[in-house]
Amino acid sequence: AEYECFQIELAKNYGVAEWREDLKKILLKAGVENKSMVFLFSDTQIKSETFLEDLNNVLNAGDVPNIFAMDELDNIYTSMKPVVQDEGMQPTKANLYSAFTKRVKSNTHSVICMRPPLGVKIVIEAVCIMKGVKPKKVAGEKVSKACTSICLWVRAMHKYHFVAKGVAPKRAALQQATEELAETQRVLDAAKARLTEVEEGIASLQAKYEECISKKQELEFKTEQCTARLGRAEKQSGSTVIKLGDAIIPYHDDFKFYITTKLPNPHYTPEVSTKVTIVNFTLSQSGLEDQMLALVVAEERPDLEEAKNQLIISNAKMKQELKEIEDKILHKLSASEGNPVDDIDLIATLEASKAKSGEIKAKVVIAEQTEKDIDVTRSQYIPVAVRTGILFFCTNDLANIDPMYQYSLSGLSPSSSTASLMLIYQNINEYFTFSLYSNVCRSMFEKDKLLFSFLVCVRILMNENKINMDKGSIGPC
Image (cartoon, rainbow, N blue to C red; front, side):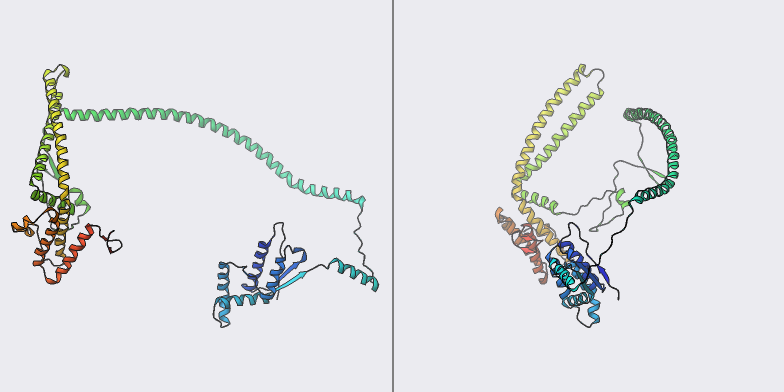
């Protein structure tokens, strides 16, 4: 079989790392590719004692400790797996690497070329003299100094002949290319001059274009302004109509068409949604809390609720008066002819309107501050409204258990006056929760009462942030 010879190539920076890389190549070819290798190594290539130690390990064990990385070992294991299976052994890492090292030892042969030391050479020369072995003299090459110059000249002329023969067509082509370049340059200069002229013309046209666009925009603005003025100046009496297909139907502005549905979560096509206004009247948690807050305050502090309602009505009236004053001023200004400063009636109206407006604004500020004070007092009853909303939606969810469970807030109100006397502020939540639970449980099956109790308890704990829904645990979040 043929052997592949391998020899390292020494360089200035050749060290242990490069030596290990060369050894890897030999080991992989011998072990993985199963090639017969001859490693030729001379004494002039020994730059470190590590080279000899590694070479000794290859000859004895077929391996150099810690020479392969983990990914390289994985490739070796993968390549040796069929070999181990063919031998009937288990493909463990130990068996795979053992098969690899066996191949390396059998396929790798080292040839080390060593020169004898000086002492050995002296001894050998002495033995040759004693034995009468004469040295063989090698004659040097004979050189004629006279013919050297002639030979060099002839060789130079021979080389020049072939070089000149190849350069002559290139010189002619260079001359032709130079002439063509000059002609092309003249054409390019003329084209650049024309391009400059065209660019100047484009700049002039661009300036004219921008001027025309500016003039067009100014005219469009004046047209829109004139159209708006004409529309405000000339109001033609007409009627509003709706075109349905080919029919034109008169339309009154006060006409409104309402369509209701009892579906809990209706879905409509985009075509329908763009033509109608969809209003969701479903009771929400925040809306119910606002209603319950108003009811609780009306029950506990009717004076506050009455004062708030009166303030709302008063604010609305004062804002309406301000709007009427502003409309009156605008009407006077639009109907005034000549210089407004000379119109005594207009000036008197403006002064009266200013005084009235200042008075109303002062009242509005006082009313808004009073409303804020009332809202602070009402906010003390927000926990009661929140608890009421939670309990209502708990009873509302009972319909998911049995459709028979239908309740209303009016049906759950306490009937005896004694209960009302027991409703002290600190105990409203506890009493109302117990009262609602007792009333609802009277109408429920025994098997559903525990579920209702659990539902009420969980909802209350969730509102108090004592249940962490993300972690599924009960306790402070």
